Image (cartoon, rainbow, N blue to C red; front, side, top):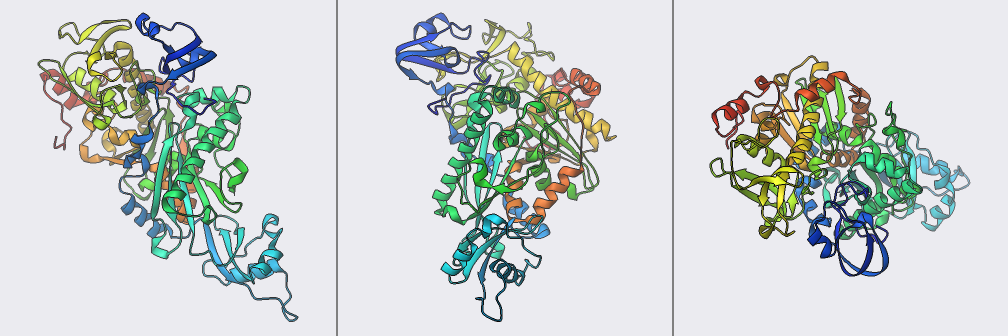
Length: 626
């Protein structure tokens, strides 16, 4: 970590997950034996990085399954929403094309004996004559410090940046006419990944055009897979500073890549808009997050005032302003607000359910009149955490699985069609559904004694199904799914479904009353709807009621950057949400226990799935063409 070498470490280095495998190629390490490493592997130099310390010169190899590979993040669904052009255009038409920071070219009249008002008053008067900037503009002290010199050195021709949200305030003054070179950056700070886009802010109809995109893993993943692990790390000595530095360095890396790709000067960026969950925002701003995880789960803040980018370490010009999409509660953050505002669900009378399934499952129910929201601790299973051979969606990750109902042999597809090295979230959903529909496991997630195959065997962690034998994999180990893995996946899907059920009950509705289920996030776009329904992760509804949005958090930040009206709309959405805390909610626990079954204890909620299980046929969602 000190050297900036990032490896998979789901548990944050507590010796629990067994994912940070390395190989001692030369030299020595002080290391303990761990149950996840067999005797032969240990003799071959395999160690866990978190329980090993350097005791002398050594050469360490990081195997493929322990590395982070950002190439998969280039997928469009990680970067933006699926229908960016149409969604953006509709919202910009409705909320206007006035960026959060507008840039004005001014020819300021020179002072003379008849007109000798102050330099600041001249700037304010010149701005007042500009279309759309009629309100008084405040010049803060930071801008006035060298104002006189700048005006005279520029021969009274300057470019002024004005923050348009809230009080009109000049954020910077530069020499000459730079109004035609005006850009903004939108950033989604996720627990696992950070994505950013460079946007044009000039040219009328050209405002909002995406000029460059980039993404990378959040460098905080070395300190823990989920927000709770990071909050705990932040409580260690110097922990908060380290977490703040690494996430800011991730954003700085992306900003540098965007500017290089589009050949844009750093000084031409007038503002940056960020969206992220509440914990990520606390860590990004360097604010103590510990009360987020302690009852009654109170964050220090859910909204953050605009400030200079340099105040938190972002590599930007002195005048570049930082804005954040506001959140709602400890576990419903600005990323969800951004996505809900982008989805358009608040513009409709019909009721929609918005879901973002990740290490936390955030859900929002409502329409243009009301909004209920909640967050359920889904756990990191769909990100590969807590699963013996779980991994993120990297090249070689098993993402699709089909099991022959007669031979019980699997057919797999991997990301990038590489040799298998693990199983990512979409693959896990497929596996559970396929094992269930083939009768290999029962509705409790236990292996059935009736369906015999060489693939099912007793392993070190109980019964398991072999997806790939060692000779077929990149890691030279059998890739299996165990009953412990199945339990973790069932708990994860049960938490998400139970959260949705509680929101619907509080709204006096049932799943059948939903006009649309909106699934956000890169992971959401990769899942097979039919398989997600078969295991009880999603409700059994006609396929046409489901809509994917990809990275809706980034999409909302992008529109907010070029539309002050939309940014204010996002604030209204945040203030209008009623949060339902599920942590100590008896209703949630009842629903959770009911959902700890495949697909659910109440088979009437999944009639087509139950019919397929009874008849031994393939399951098909109503309206599906597959």
